[in-house]
Image (cartoon, rainbow, N blue to C red; front, side, top):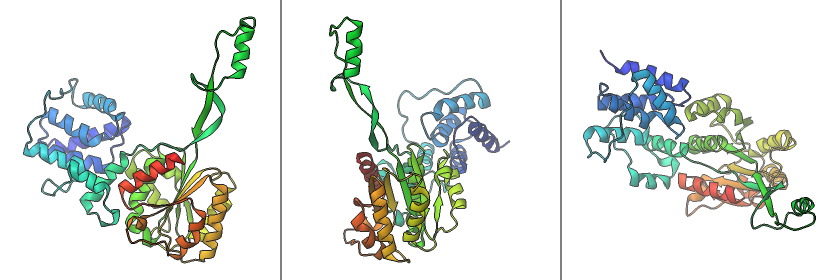
Length: 360
């Protein structure tokens, strides 16, 4: 009897236990199990651990589900690395790309992963795009911080006068210790506005996956800009990136359509700016700046946004080119009102963006 069909049931049990193993991961697991031999529980265990788990929190859930499905004993980790074998190489290739195209396809290794980080997203092959998705899912963004009103105890900060007086009242006026304090911090709001027009189509998938990685871990609002404004915050807060991107695709009616940046930015400010979404927030606009509407309108709305937000960053995928010049009508109109123009063509550029956001 072929044991592979039963493995889909194990994957379903794993999802029920809280591990976000979507269809791509399950297909990779089945391909790895077929290559390694599904009759060996130890190989099944490690194949599933490598392909179905995406975060450290998944590991104990995976172990519990494996015990319940296959038995009580878990295979032990090998004491020393085993020499490379065709089967282990097949599994490594499948895991590194997250694809089931088979072992014959050349896969990026550890050194090529660094090269991939600097490659322009628009020129990647299908296997490289699959690997890039895995790398984006591993991002751990940190929110920008702002000073909070409430102060916190600190050993080296200025004296906390209120606590000093309270301490003196308890000791009859004697100064026994000198409590100190420092200013506390709170996460600053982050707003991502992603252009999904036709000219941005080569970058849209990577940018929305980046937005998903950020929105899952920081207080972030996400909107798409095209011929209309669409809010994607709820869709992109789902844990599984494939489910999140599928929900986002269903919600965006103007994907790969025209570009009316001025009108959609005005809609954002009229509807959401009044609610305080962008007030004192770090706002990041992802767009190449091609505008079919009135550039003067975009310039006026960019000025409104600059007055409202803490900082405005504009990420243009074409800015990573050495011969790029911001001469497109839209970016030229908005440029005087933004704080920084950044590249967004590669994973390395998006890492730079995260550091810039953190410093904001």
